[in-house]
Structures are given as C-alpha cells and as structure tokens.
Length: 247
View (tube, rainbow, N blue to C red):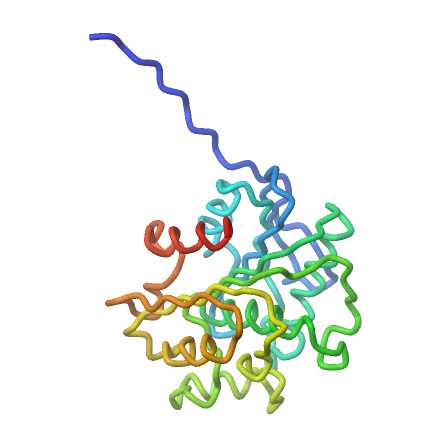
C-alpha cells in the first residue's frame, strides 16, 4: 500500500486578540486576517445584556476560512443598551477602516447580535441624526447575516419584550423592521421554525418588508439551532452563508 502524505491543515491565524477599539473595557475585539477585501464583523448574542465574543470564536474562524478578514467584537452591556451598542459597532467599523483600510463590511450576528447587525445595516442609508452621527464612514456596509434575530418588537412575548424594552429605553428607532425600505442592501435572514424567542415570524415579516433579501426558515430548529456555529458547525446554515457571500 502506498502511503500518501497528508498536508496538515493550517490553524487559523489571529494577529490581534483583545485589542481596544474604544476606551471602555468591553470595547475590544479579536481580529482574524485573510486575503479578501470585504470584512466580516461578528456580533455576539446574549439578550443585549450578556454574552461574549469568545462564544463566537468558531464562527469568526469560519469566516476567516472562507477568505474574509474578520473582527469578533465585544460591546458595552450596560442597560439601556441603545444607542450605545449601535455606536460601538459603528466605532468598530471606523477603527477597521482606519487601521486596515477596510472599504466594505458584512455584519453577522445571532439573536441580539443579529438584531444589531440588521438594525445597523438597514439604518445605514438613513439620515445620521437617527444614530451614529459621531462615526461617519467612508466604507460601506454592503450586507448583513442575521440568525434568530429580534426584528419586530411587537411580536415579542412577555419576558423577551421586557428585555427589549429595557434595552431600547422606549426608542422606536431601535425596532429593526421600522428601517426596512427599498434602498437597503441585500441581507440574509435565517430563523428556526421552533424559535419563540426571536420569534421566527419576525424574520418572515422583515423579509416581506424588504425589497432585496434572502430568507430561510429552518425546520425543527429552536432559537439557538439557527446559529452558524454552536457546539459544531451547522452545515445547512454554513451553506446558505457561503452562497450569500459568494452571491
């Protein structure tokens, strides 16, 4: 039998771990370099008040393996979180624009991270008075990927609604679906048909409100079942993500 030589798989390279993009202790990120020109920003979930970038390390490495320079970020978790968390993401983008010359971004997030990713992407073409006036970008947000996001506050059940209301501080601009219009970039929306936290109907409604979007309802999946990477890579979600990015 001829022995075949197997090449060792290269481990993901990280050139920046826990690097600051702001002055607050939670304004830090890990950076995974790649040769692509379009940057991916990973925004963790956790109900707006919890979670950590370390929970999405494997997701960040996955985007890197696809050739996308990836930043896996933390953000301020104090309540109310709006508009502070939005401003944190915008500050992250500005930092990458200045440090690495980034010109295009795709935002990815799950649950509350998906909400932030979609909110910022859809609101990017609105007047800066809405939010983010302090972080003018030359670079463009060209897309978003949201899994299990909270996109329509009117559909939330009592406990998730209390969390969202506390986070939003009564501001109607925090509701994602309110920003949907014909000028928004193409986005990818994924939800589980057993998700009552998101809930999945909000994902469907957001898709209907957008002129250019891709929506998939994952059969048999709960809220966390729609993640790109849980205990292991979700091959179905990974396929949709790859096709979306290639498209």
